[in-house]
Length: 115
Image 1 (cartoon, helix red, strand yellow):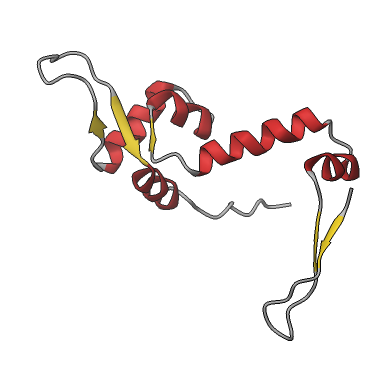
Image 2: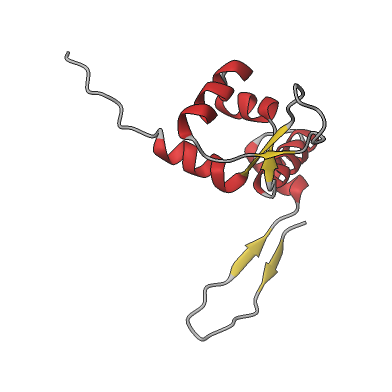
C-alpha cells in the first residue's frame, strides 16, 4: 500500500511519497527477504564504530595479511582489546575514523590507458 505524506514544512517543500519495503522490493524486482537483508547489512556497516581485521579484509576484498600490511604502512593507532598480560595475542579493533583515513589516503585516479 502506497502512502503519500502531504505535510509540508514550508510553502516550497515538495510532496514526498512513502513506500513499504514490500512495495519497493516489488518495484525493483527483488524478493522482500533479499531487500531486508541488504537494508540490515547496510545499517550495521554504517553504524559500526570499530572494525576487526577480518571485517576489513572483507570490506577491502583482500587477505588479512594485506590488511595488517596496510595498517602498518599508515602508522595510525588501533585499539587492542587483548589482555595486557598477553604478549603474543593481538586483537586489534580499528576505529571507523582510521578506516576512513586509510581509504582516503589510498584513493587515486584510474590511469588512462592508451588505445
